[in-house]
Length: 365
Image (cartoon, rainbow, N blue to C red; front, top):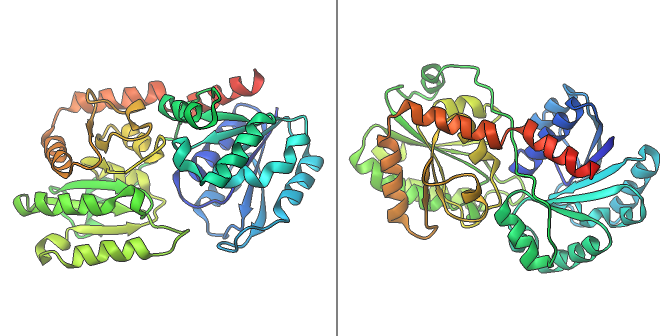
């Protein structure tokens, strides 16, 4: 099959990472794959480097970041489809509205909903999505809970293909990685990976960490990510909160920014935490599971489709004391077999190969 994937950008964020990894996995299954980014892409972009090392074709429409709506994009997508003649057109994130003129083509058309449907886009875009779904685009849910949200918002039953991800590669040992950060390897590391935005609620995690760190002098917090879309307003809030703490605590909070060495960070981590207000099925959680990490997450969106209290800790999103208690329990957990069980859970359900096979079957049917 000739499969065209369309993404709004190549930001180093969950939906974009997934789109690239899915495209590469589909190409490895023998399909001809073309990935189109609506936004411009810098030459040093981490995802672009992965693409150029793969067998997939790539094209950028070079829309300027932050430039607002560009009405030429739908027509340029039409030209690409006319010339390339894909069997499958598959959009992600905010790319669907730009693909409106592709509706008339006979290619099978899919749109992956990467979040619970009422949070993925604003009301006006949801109206347009609803129209496109009626005109033949097939919404795809990344988890059962996301599927339920599609039914609630769009009144349509969506097939479910669970998110998948590549297990992040480890290139250095834990002690060596922590040494670069002037941290002794005997310390315990709590890690959060996600964009620095209000919905990820890192402020809550910082608040909880401050209480934990007062009694445990050997615990550190890593916050990985940035916000390439909105700039730095939430980062400023985080810095203000951190600077108000006692120095012996604030120095143990590390803002690591956007990283390409996620495998090394996860290998150095003892407990992975997500404290989001809402989610789809976050890739960072799946990456943490792939490394067998003890995971503490707020029970929102599709998180409970991947994590249960049998293999992790689920807490209410507005209960900081629950989050604190769960993190302390996870830090105390030492069972190595527990970690292996988590890895098997990931391999059975959330590898990118299993995900690509699911989409391949969906495309054929």
